[in-house]
Length: 433
Image (cartoon, rainbow, N blue to C red):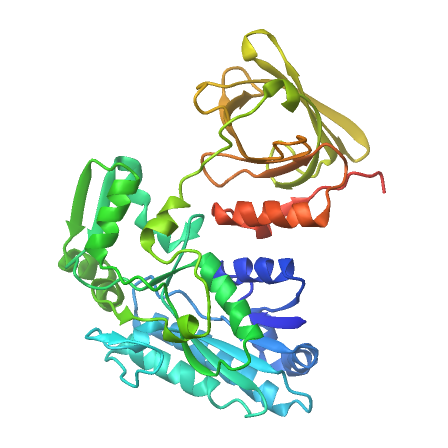
């Protein structure tokens, strides 16, 4: 199925595109340039090929709302949605489905609201959502319309969670005052799955809340993060401080909505993260619990990697490990750049026998980096997924130059589950052609 996505280069769009491609769909990205006045014919040509159109375009709300920036928030949502709807309506063969994003900021801060709630809140954000949705509602009735109201989208590898977790490095867990306001949220993996669920479930029409089933307040979120990350201090930043720095935009942080995903639950959707503890459990890196280093030794082919300065533009990359005395390991990485062989020799060791999947590797003096064995073919030692303590490095290795598609798909799922942005993966050429 061909799926057009506006905002495909954004935080959500990149992850959704990678997820849908893994499911076998073809993504047609719609960049900002596609919505210029002189690009109407190109937009028509792209949408005429697609069965589904997903509208994710919109500037971030997480910055101070000046008068000028309010215009950008408006234009990036309403104008793009208007252009998409006008183009869809002009097509002789219209897409089967139009999914247009919105936000739970539509709802009032009082009471709890499911997909059938008719109440709307007050203020700029609610007005913005209302006008955004009104533009989407003008799509022709031949096209199924679904409006997805997002909660705060959480992902271990960035976005809102990156901001929320900054203080954890200092062993502090922080809540935004007053603390009793609700924090509607959804795991990025559940958002991706829910989009696919909407595409497949033709009975879903109209408003659908994209939030986790478990409602939580800012204080409860802080306390769960403090427990998960063993924080020494728990703080609440007063609302007045947030208002001082962010002005009117602070309202979406210091207030919140209680939102229920009624339609998702009624149509049999299964959440990966029903509650915040399930999400937080996946934000910490865990490795294989046991490994036979002697079996791990030998030659591995690099199937995919996050590009990095050490391997930039290298093809036919391999890594060869040799076990030395004292469980130390010699590491020899090889690869070709413009037809010339490049070889780097390093060393590795396991610093803690109780966590054998966490190794340290150095290619220059004593500057060691993390080498985390996240997934391993424990039966045959034919493939492995390697990461790091942060999300900056990721490798898929295999004993052979090629890896079966089902194994690739499994490893990509495992990597995404740990919070890696799998759309960043570079698939390495292992042949001379």
